[in-house]
Image (cartoon, rainbow, N blue to C red; front, side):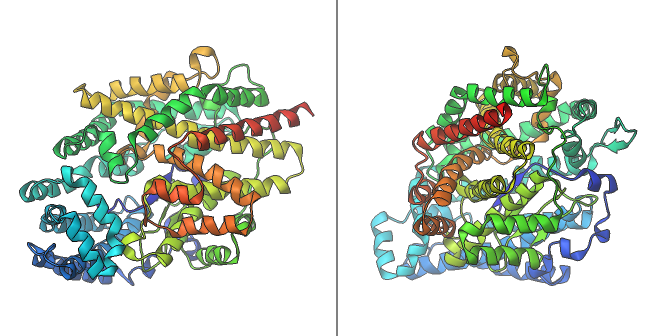
Length: 622
């Protein structure tokens, strides 16, 4: 296990052109726009002292060796002890990772992050005896223990996972050996992060107005959205040509990542890497395969969206480099960060005063790191794993409406974490990734719905509707495209086929061309796009991306229920936010009103997408 793999929901970077041009030092940004890491620990020195304390305390895990299943009290004591150790290790890790993400070029921050990783791997080696001992407890004895110690109910799901996982738990010696691989498993991802964010040279281009721009990830995200086609094509060509130079390096990093997954799959006797990734949360592999199948079946709907975009942009040929450009000329919704806060507060009113009060606290109490600075991690995420503190949000706010959407998206994650932490014991507070994106995309739907009621200008309304369709493109179709690529990579490795940068680019390019209708003239996919896989950090997270798509589908259904329903529907949604990991994710969503084992939620999402396109066409015809 990698201690940095706490619950984190990321999207790719979207930073402002103005801010990118300035690229301020962190010290130049007002403290009110920076998260306060010292809510976790008052100083680096306190962090160091706490780490030493936890390391010393964690050594006592061996006191439980041979006695975990001896009695109900021993089992409960073991769960309580390991819960406290994991909670403190997680808090230490959050502090170090937030500090590292403030400036990925700061080696002191990177060193602190690695120190906690090594400490946790040492703890995992010491505790490697626990899985075999837990698996050896007979089921009837666990039932009896739970009657003796009712608080063991807090660990019911964990015990059920152990019951299901017995066939994949190894001997004491083998578990100890697996634990020693923990540091190695994170090497491809950590190397990718440092190289792609801090050390890979960036190209520089000159825009049509004579401005020179260094194409960092943040800068590229802005220039690719330029209304000037000449500028976005220049950025597109230079950015991906630069990535192509390092195709071999990125290929080796991805190969190392995939091989690590395959090693763990085989060592634990899973039939496939996909099964290994989904098994712990009791998600049938059919859910993954059905998502890819349903999306491929509905590519004509996606192509309808692309042709609509081409029509609105008045282009003879829609190119992949046009996809992020404004659809409606001379319409660009821009908001200051303070204006964005007010829009968010207005949008979330249907969720009640308590929900809104916590969001205000997030704004006022420095839970959010708002603007980009030199060396800062790109993109956005919410980290809500600090159970006794509060969630943190990383942003790279740029003033565009899409950035307002990102803010309310990450606040959805934050509120999910906040309500789960407040309403669940630590043992069941952590919700899993499969439901993680529901709360975030649900919030985006609230924002879009509110904005549609505010806008009166036809062009602005079309622009917003197209932005909503862009959400379907980016979250449902694009993430499923990623999921199909990720599955294909693993299946190639499982067949023993070599994974090189060149091979991965060919595989990725073929999938992209299929999705975007390249052969049918729907969208021209330049060969440079083939290297885009190297840009996506989520491929290092082990079958993570498909959950964006499934969560998006679920959130579309839930948001319609809440916006058109009654207080009981709001209460049921808030109960979903408060459920944490108290049940398997499929069951939590069923309680909320969505059954992801059927095609109904997906069918409803496609129906909604077509209705939005119908509305756009009506506005155009007027």
